[in-house]
Length: 187
Image (cartoon, one colour):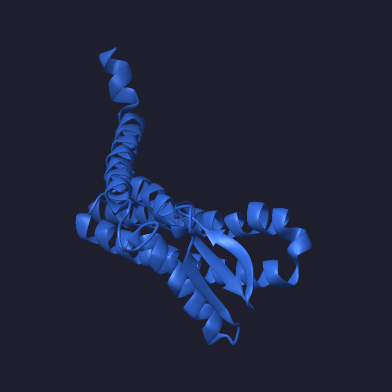
C-alpha cells in the first residue's frame, strides 16, 4: 500500500488540493450567499454589481439597457431597448467559475507569489470577460431571440469555460517550462 501511495503521490496531492480548495471556497461562497439574502443589494452584492456593470457596458456601446431587482425572485431583470430581455441570476456572476479556476491553480501550486499573482490576474480576467460575455449575449438575444437556446446554452458558456481552460493550460505549461529550466540549471 505504501508503495502505491508513493507511486501516485502527485496524483493524490492534486486531488486532495483540488477538492479541498474547491470545498472550502464553495462553503465560504455558500455562507456569503446565505448572509446576502434580504440584503440591500439583491440578490447578492456580486450578482447585483455584475448586472449593473453589464448594463453600463451596454449603455457605453450605445444600447439602451438597465437592470432592476426582480420583484419576487432573487435575480436582476435586464431590459434592453425598454424590453424585458433576461434575468441575471447568481450563477451569472462567474464566482463559481472563479472558484473552479482557483482550485485547479492551487492544486498545481509551487511558488506562492507566482500562484497568487496568476490567481488574481486570472480571476480579474474571468470576471471582466464574464461582463463582456453577458453584454454580448444580451445584444445577441435582443437581435436573434430565436437562437436563445444555442446562444445561452452553448456559445456563451463555451466562451467562459474555454477561456478558463486556456488559463489552466497556460498555468500548467508555465510550470512545465519552469521545471524544465530548473532541471537544466541542476545539470
